[in-house]
Image (cartoon, rainbow, N blue to C red):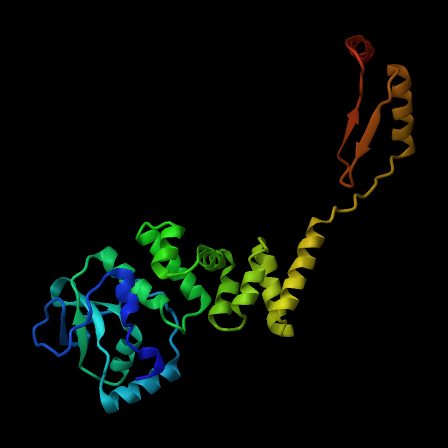
Length: 291
């Protein structure tokens, strides 16, 4: 058993109000009991936020299981057709399959879908080896599936609301950036700096620069600040010079209308003619002349 397989103890029970796992084993697959269950009758939890498991660590755990057996039971719930769905312990479940076990010890709990989702997600949040994106996915799923507010979620997981919000903001990052966090190519600090950038294409360009140049978090923050500052700088307008013909027309029409006519155009050739007036009388005079 590795350090990541230590019992959850009071943590999960305190969060979810669940019963403690009783000692001893039973051949009866009843709720609240330890049982040996055929491994091919157990299905993975669809709400498992972890998408990547370290193959070397799984192999190491599988070797340990071959020697000592699976010491800590997984937690399952009964579903239809005599099957069970995993609530917690997917890493142990995968390693046990890799070790060739045909049955494993499991703690059986009878819980509904909502409770199962909540237990699976909270159990994952308590792990120390989850990356920031996996934690953020857990938080988002708990909010959506269990209809929690950020305040209620922060109370359930024992984190400040600001901490929960910071994790959830990471899900606004582009797919490329999230993958970089997941694969440990950039740190959570780098990702938080990129949250300030709304343009996903710019996020992707920055993350490539972080990886290629091995930028620190502070260097990344400075780079983001610089790029955002440049983006807010007013763009210099290209002044278009009117041709002699247009300028002569502008002067002539101004004299005829007895008001300063202004002609502007852009680089594409589009533009506007502005004819100001100061009163209804001036407007009537302009209309009469134009007609």
